[in-house]
Image (cartoon, rainbow, N blue to C red):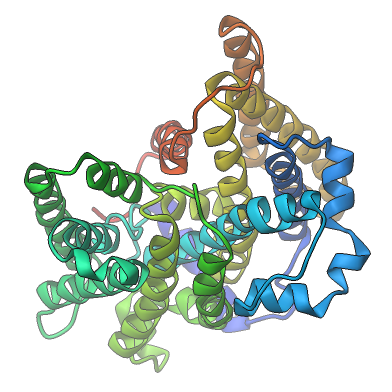
Length: 435
C-alpha cells in the first residue's frame, strides 16, 4: 500500500509540475536499443528465403539510391499503382519481403500503444485489447465472415475492425452504471471475451471446408504470412492518426491513473476522456488485428517492459511502447520463419546483446543519475543475460542453430515469449492492479 501511495504521489507531482524534458536518458537508451534490435531482425527477415541473400546484399538492396529516389516505386507501394520494372533482387526484397517487415512494425507499435492506454484508463496492469474483449470481437467477426457470410471475405480487415469496436462498445455498455469504473470494465471485458471465444469455438464445428478452418486459425492466432503492400496501405493511415493521438493523450493518462476523484478535482471530465482514449486504443488495436489477426500478449507485456525501464510516467510509457512493440514483433516474426532451433538461438543472441547494451547504458546512466540504477534495473539486466545463456543451452540440446522448413504463426511465438515474461512479472510483483 505504501508503494502504491508513493507511486501515486510521484505521478501527482509529475502532473502538477508537468515539467519539460520528460524525454530522459533511459527512454532514449530504450529507443536506440529497440531500433537496433528491429533493424537487425528486419535485415534477417529480408535476407532469408528461397531467394537467398547475404546480409550485405540485402542491406545494399534496401538502401539502393536508384530505387529510393524513384517516385513511381513509392507511388506503387503507397498508392497501389503499377510497379515499374525492377531487377529481380529488388522485387524480391521490396515487393515481397519488406511489406511483411513494415506491416509487422506497425502492428507491434499499434498493439503496444493500445495496451498501454487500456492499462491506464482501467488502472489495471492486466488490461489489454485481449482482456477487454477487443480481440475476441474481431476474431468472432472474422470467423462469421469466413464460415457464414463468405461473400464479405474481401472486406475481412474492415469486418475485423468493426467486430473489435462492437465488442468494446458492448463491454462499455455492460460496465455502465451511471458511469464506469476500472473494475467493472475488466469484468465486463472478461464476460464478453468468454462468450465470444465460445462462439468462435462453436463456429469451427459448423465449417466443413478444411481450407476455411486453416485460414480462420491463422487469423485467430495472428500471422504475418502473405501480407503485402495492400495491408500496409490499410494500417498506415490509422497508425499516422492513432499514434500521435496516443502521445497527445498520454498526459491525460497520467491524470486518469491518479483515480477518478483526483481526476475530477483537477477539472477532468473522466467519462468523456476515458471513452475518447478508449476509442484511440480500439482504433490502433483493430487496425493491427485487421491486417495480422489476433497477435496475443504484445499489448499486455510491452507496456510492462517499458514501465520497468522508464518509470510510470505515461508519456514515457507510450513513446517507449512505440519503439519496443515493433522490436518484439520483428524478433517474433524471425522466430516464426526460422524454426524452433534458430529462434531459440536468436533469443540467446538477443538476451546477451540486450544485457550487454544495458550494461553500457547503465555506465552512462550512472554518471547522469545514479538513482536510476536501482534494483529493478539490475534485475532486468541479470534476467536478460540469464535468458540468453539459457537459450544458448537449449539451442545446443536441439542440435545447434538450424533453419526449419515450415513457418508458424507469429502470434504463437509472441505467446511463447509473453507467457514466461508475464509469469516473471507476477512473481516479481506481489500485487498487479486492483483486481
